[in-house]
Image 1 (cartoon, one colour):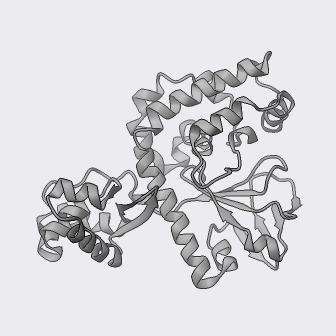
Image 2 (cartoon, one colour):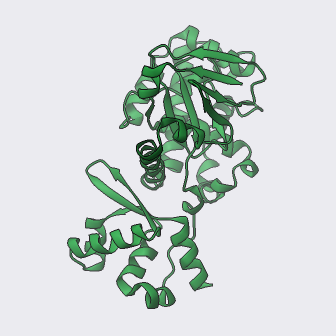
Image 3 (cartoon, helix red, strand yellow):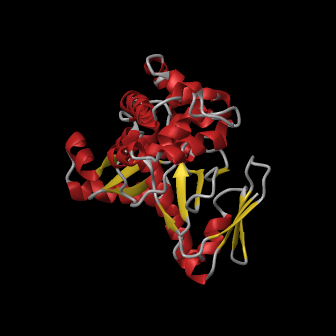
Length: 319
């Protein structure tokens, strides 16, 4: 059990963040044991051929049989807009003692593949992770990030409507908040109680944690939890003729719903369907209000993505 003790100021400073590097590291769990991550089987199928070309000797040494990864792969993001290249630069600068102690905390020793020069080992790790990113993540990252950001938007709405305590208690069955203490039930049999002491608690949605995760060591306070909305992430491609749905929603809205298996902005959709931006926005608002779409801000744009309910509606009419 891990317990984070928060004072009143700490509760008000709880923040959310996303980390591409964390997603890369945690994805090794699904690669190692696909059966434990059924929601990511679509991603695993799509990337199966590409993963055959990865440096699995290096990547495999970054995870153990407990599905733990070293803390240097789980940095606390400095910004909600953290870029992978910035994280790679920070990873390359990991001190030798930290690098080795993080590996020992996971494996009990430094794996043979990382013996010798720390800088050389870090270069190999970054090279292997970059290949993983370019072949298996980059093509799907906009869609994955849209789901992660939609989760953050949802949690923010929870805080506004019901408060931080309600939000924390809704993150996962493994996470509980009571009287200033956030308790996280982990696979680690050791009990740890850590005071936040003004260091801020960071919450991070991820695609590759089934319940809840936290740093292996006593690093910056951080909890990783399973993002909402993953069920529709790897659904089949949009149906070609959603005629039955069109009879209910109208042809334009049905077409938009079918197209939004991948996230897109209203501007992009307007161009694709030959509809004015104002008309597209009106249709999207109706679909979102009906629970058929989710939306989230991505940079200067608002991205829309079909919800699980929207996917279920299309499937029920296309079978």
